[in-house]
Length: 103
Image (cartoon, rainbow, N blue to C red; front, side):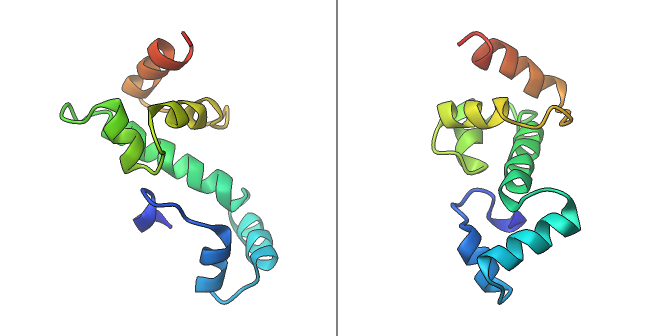
């Protein structure tokens, strides 16, 4: 899943890749990692975006697309919905405050 952060990844596709039913995969994943597959994927995307904020050659729309969001707006929604326990770097927090919180 990490190698495909920028792509649409369905639960059915991931489960099939390890020869499990969707339900069995989701249960096993949550038992192993303590979080549902979709929540884990969203967190990985936000963490990758946090790292990409350091690249001055990328704008927000490019970062959103690289990490698998359709556009900057959907990225903002994903960012707002991140778990409260998730810490991001200063650039990430500054972007949220100026772009999402103001909306």
